[in-house]
Length: 222
Image (cartoon, rainbow, N blue to C red; front, side):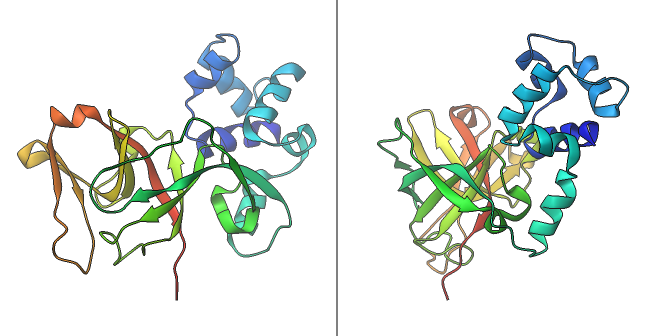
């Protein structure tokens, strides 16, 4: 069970084997491979460090099928367990790029596992709030969103809703479009208001843009 859990949690959190290896005193990534395949077992201190990294107990790592637990949560079998997620309390613009201030001392918000489904206890999840109308066909103004951070660019696909940031600390929420034909990145609105337009960036200009994360959960007001 331990080997299965270590592999599942690493992939769930979008960590590479090389990243885990470097985190653990620069061990070779092949050592991590052996732990995840069950060829060998990590020492107790390693298990303890990984348990802390993933927000799980030692007992859970060793004895509980965490993937099955998460699937049950996602299927609606409610769990009373909760977890603390980083919470950015200021609104993220769904219109033009807008500077977010006061992000130095980030608070956390405690949420039940069932609300996050398969993303429950993922330490790369950040909770944000939308401020603007340019995505209102999908995400309404004032909605709460869960953003999966730490993604490699190859894990961002056309049409994904992303939180993007420039090197000046300005944030916006848009659809991500990789316009390879014209060598540019487009941040595209999805709004009932036709005044909102694409935000195009040449590949050279796009170097100043950081994809902070991908929106994986959002609230809907009825």
